[in-house]
Length: 357
Image (cartoon, rainbow, N blue to C red):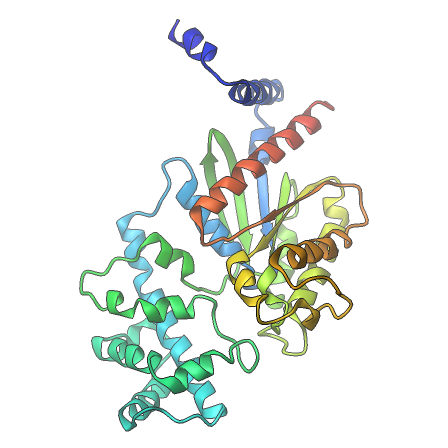
């Protein structure tokens, strides 16, 4: 009786979702639940596009999700390592650019930083304090302004440098935002099962660097939808593994290859144009003509992102649907909102396919 009364209070939108959920359950039962095992989402894209951040967000927003304290603490040394490696990059850039430190003390700190191993095991209070002092040095700040032009630096570097004082606490436990921004190069294949608003699925995240892509084919069978992640803000950057190739051009080539692959002829594609926060800031100082010289529209976030979206859409030569979303993978609320749309898209796709049986 309670269920009947509850159903009377549903909004039209909730009734429609309940109807689709019921249809899906019915069709799944009809096929002896075989298809439930096939709800498989493949997360693809080039290196540093934000795939692994999306994967971590799914753990946060899924039912009963989030990170345990043990899992949070496991990220400490990754974060310490990120701080050390990225400051080493900046110190190297200061030398390359022939800049002068504000003091002899900071010059000594920089010399010490260069000698450190690139792991979190080298972390100590002294090292953390040196990183704080160097980050406030004008030479380091001048070098930082040359990132993407003269050298490669992780997107999260400034965030970590600004929070080093927090990392120095003896009882420091990484927050979700710390974890989302922690950078670990993806190798191999990460796979997990998630439940999002009563929708169960498997998601696979694979390494995006060129050397990792040969492993992708092992994941191509029985894919329900491909989630392709591309960074909007990479239009003026080069690949780490090939400094002659523009990252945005690489993303377009890769999307062309995947989107038009015979493996995915009938597969729905969901395109995440990611890092909108960085793109919104960068477009004010670096025009997209850096990558697309033929572009003659306004240098605004809206016009430029729409043009880039069009470039991706033009790569498809097939008839499958491509659904595009602008995303900021480090924003849990944004990812949650986008994935609600993704869930509905996938359910509709499954219902469409199942109705053929």
